[in-house]
View 1: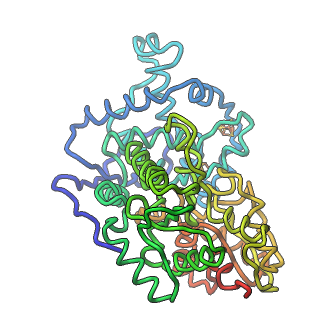
View 2: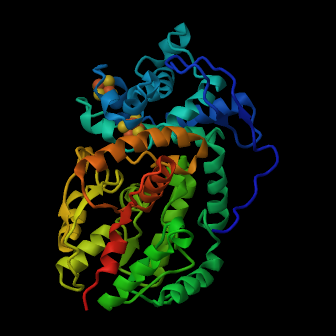
View 3: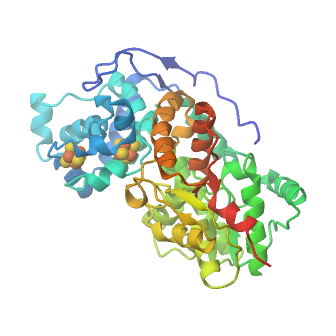
Length: 455
Ligand code: SF4
Ligand code: SF4
């Protein structure tokens, strides 16, 4: 992975001031980072303007309909594993609710005139950073149990848009954002892609086409596949080459992980997705194949249609869907592994993306006897690293607590293999396993398919 562009002067500021956030029960105040040189008032105004822009009818209904049943608390891995009331999902939205009542609610002028709801201040926003970025993976598990259907994950995403505008996101994420703005990827500039692919190609002995002027499928990667997980990239190439399809990777659009989606940087999110779509159109590809990455699926498959302005001119599919298709259509054949396995469902692909059955069909084609985790499919627990949490080093202690929950569920299955279909989940689980000195290694579904191709 290349060195990302450096931090500019004045962009680093870490503070541990106490704020006055009303629901915190932890004795120490959360850390926060600031970017840019805006004054405090400017930051608050920028955040409020962003919130107000997003307060549509759906947001209003969601913010007004909580019946305080508390069910979401028992659904959130951060609350379950810490028992800390501040991690109750709906409480993570308290500031958004206050902003709504003051600026956009039905009685907003009266609320403001009588001072019925206090305007969020800079200390509130700073302390909110930990609840939005360190202790929410936007996994949506709370949403599935809420009797009122409140989409807390979506509202956290909207809140992050305001925090990004205010220059109040974790510095590790901001650093990746700046790299992606400059390079089109937090991992590497596009101009280095041909060299990286040539290295991977030589190491694994597989042909990886780059920058073809015409192809049927535009294949994309996640940052880890250009660094630590290059085997996944080589394995995707191995499978695609076996099918005989004409495909390519391309400097114009190659990283689908979309750091803008996680950070709340809407402009970057749109720019990165548009680069993929425009590159696919330019080379005449009918399909964009996304890597084993959950947020790539959320950003490109589901969110692009919101702003593209017309029907997307290409099909966008996740690697798991592609594997399922080429196996079930007989374009590749697999050897049977014949062992027990359990499967970690990536939230953005399964709960938010709906691909519950596809991975299970692929596992069955590999001859695995699947032993499900106690919580699996739509109700599976998050790995704890989604939504950028895995890249946010200060959240590591919290992540490790969540990892223990997953570890216990995996061990309870007694399964020999532990498989997942998202590279970010895999990294989170690898880090957790290393920290816990656990001898199980999460495996990639894609790599298992490539390793077991039959002649
Ligand atoms: S989206 Fe996931 S991490 Fe965020 S509050 Fe809900 S359950 Fe917790
Ligand atoms: S489950 Fe829904 S209604 Fe119940 S407290 Fe949570 S957000 Fe409110």
